[in-house]
Amino acid sequence: MAKNYVRIDDRLIHGQIVTAWCGFWKIGEIVAIDDKLASNPTLQSIMLMGIPAQYKAHVVTMDEAKKLFAEESEKNRLFVTRFPADLQNLREELKSCDTVVIGNAAKRPDTKYNLTKGGGSVFFASVDDVKLFDEIAADGVNLIYQTVPKTAARTWQEVRKQIK
Image (tube, rainbow, N blue to C red):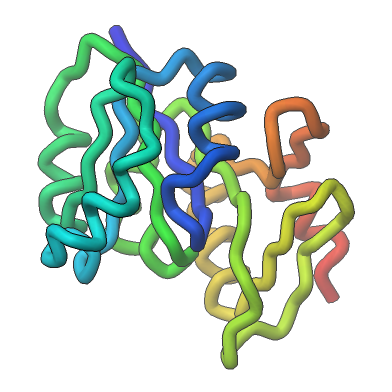
C-alpha cells in the first residue's frame, strides 16, 4: 500500500519539493492544497509547468484533498499546503499519514516564534500554530521539522522544548 506524506511549505510546489523530497519518499503524485490557486487555471499551469512528467501533479481545494486522502493510491503521495492552520482541516487525515513535515513558512503578522535553525529553511509560527502542532503530535502523528532529507529531522517534541 502506498503512503501519504504532508509538508507545510508556503511556496507549495518548487524545485526542492521535486528534487529532494519526491526522490527521498519515492513520490508518484504531488498534490498542492490551496483553494484560491485551485480556482485559477492560469496560476495552476505556471506552478505545475516545471514538474517532470514522471509525477502526477495537481492543485486541489481542501475538500478535494480530503477526498484524495480517502482514496487508495498505488503511488506514494506528497500533499503540500501553505500554512500550518491548513492542517486543522486535515486532522483526521493526518492520522493516516506516514510523516507530516514542518518545512517552510515566512513571517506573517500573527507569528511570534522563529523556529528557523540553520540549513536554509525559514519557519515562523504563531501561538495558534504551536498549539495546533501540540494537538497534532498528541494525536500520534509523526510530526517533524526538516528542511531537506539530507538535514537532520527533529521531532515536534524536540522543537517544542525550545519554544518559550
